[in-house]
Amino acid sequence: MIVIGTAGHIDHGKSAIVRRLTGTDPDRLPEEKARGMTIDLGFAFYNTPAGEDLAFVDVPGHERFVKNMIAGAGGIDSVMLVVAADDGWMPQSQEHFQIVRLLDLKSGAVVINKIDLVEKDWLTLLREEIREKVSDSFLENAPVFEVSAQTGEGFDKLLEYLNELPTKIRSRADLRKARLYIDRIFIQPGIGGVVTGTLRGGVLTVGQPVTVWPGAASGKIRTLHSMNRQVEKATPSQRTAVSFTGIEKEQLQRGGVVTDRREMKFMREHQVFALSVELIRESLISLKDRRRVLVMVGTSEVEGEIRLYDKNEIGPSQKGLLFFKPDEPLYALVGDNYIMRLITPMVTLGGGKVLDQLKYFPRRKHLADYAYLEDRLEDDVRKIILSELKKHLLAETDTLLNEADLSQEEISNEVERLVEEQKLGRFGNFVYHPEFFNRAVEKLKKNLESYLNEQPHLKGLTFEQTARLAPLKEETASVFIDYLVQSGHLVKTTDLYNLPGRGMSLKGVIKEAHDRIIETLKIEPYAPPTLAELARKGKVYQQAIKYILDTGEAYKCGGDFIFLTDIWREILIFIKNKLSTDDRLTVSELRDRFGFTRKFAIPILEETDRAGLTRREGDVRVKGDRFESEKFDL
Image (tube, rainbow, N blue to C red; front, side, top):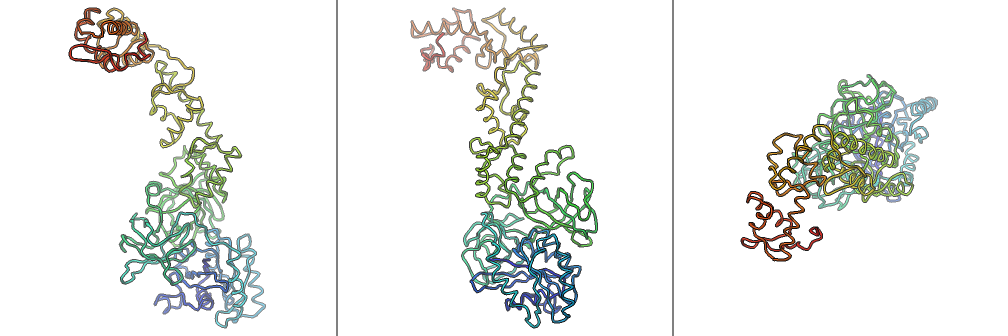
């Protein structure tokens, strides 16, 4: 299905043209019929001789209802810009033209209506004026049709164009990211709440689980209607009506979104939007920090505050980047088009694209981190992928740009090409931008080296400590650090990470504490002080103890004592020799050999039990399960 929207000034005959083409009056509200003007969106359908479906979205032309016009224009594939021959180009002609241009439409036609009311010479002048107005836009070379909705004159050529339109433009692709921005809600007896909208991004099917934004209500699709008939499946670009099970009518609102996404946490937590912006030349104001504006995406319209990216001001006819924080939850994907309006008076300022979703307004001192946004100004999938990896450094292929208006298939195919061209690197199921990734590697190594130089007594850092030094997000830190170990940038010993070839050393007060502890252990090698006694002397002593254990100068016996390594080795040799010749060892035999009191003898044997050298049987020790282990080949 191709969705065609009308645009133009009030009373220029948009509804009359749709009625002449389809036989359907798009003005559905009694107030519209009474006042003779479109207030809300109207819809009509037409089937071409080739069997292609066209849907017409008739939008209001009055300046008070431009927001309804924007709601309808957000889901169209092509536009008919209607200009009445007797009035010519009017204020809403200009505003509507700017809106469809900013929504990045690629297809359209100009329809001059009411030609029965003017002379041919006037039509020639009007055509020239319109061509000038739409120059340097997607309508610059668009066909111009001269018609009269009153008499039917000129409609044969317009119909010929419309019949061929499905062969010239493609309906929206199935990205497997279905979204239906709600433009109407009504109650159907026996069914309940029903919503309508133009489906984009994916397919909806009867029985499919869906979520309704912003309330995150979950349910299933009960029925689907399209082209005034019930269907089992709705495809992108179709005008679609949806009813639900499990979702109450009170949870439905115009401007809300029906989506096949089940998890809404990301969007809820990322409610600051990076936007490209272009102000139209008719804009009444310039944009500055903290200006409040209205942003419209699809049928959603939310007020909020802006912050500029790298300028102090963006004036009429100028472009730039900014950040927008809505007052109410907004659902928008990277690549979505939007329109920006002034809140009071309600006039159009400009529009652009959604470039990213963020958690917070960026701080001025961190703006350099957002330079990747400039790579997203073009509709280039490659640049968008590379920009994402400048931002995240590491990303899982399966979820890369999951919040963008792109299909995962398209993203995956482009990633493969970039990897083949060595413009991306791959590590497992993750990809990275080599230039930015290597910078991050060097930064971590520099941070780690600086940290360890200040504390040379450390054997290494824990994962948590290392991750804090890594310039990337917590969720990918483990993958990043694994890569560094596998590529030889880091070494891992037990659960500590270190730089290759780095040794340990002591200096200052920690060395002094170390020397005192070693001297104490040498004075009373078989009756050392408890760990608690040493640790109570302060942090410096605690760091010295850790160094002594990490370097192997001493062995920790349970949680109570440390013995010099040579002394502990002497104890183990005695135990192993005794059990090798006698098959049993008593506490008193250990105590007599070294002069231990029970304070030391019992913890020592409990430690050898734990290590597997010995095993307790009643009051004696026998060979443990690991008695023959190479660990005890002393």
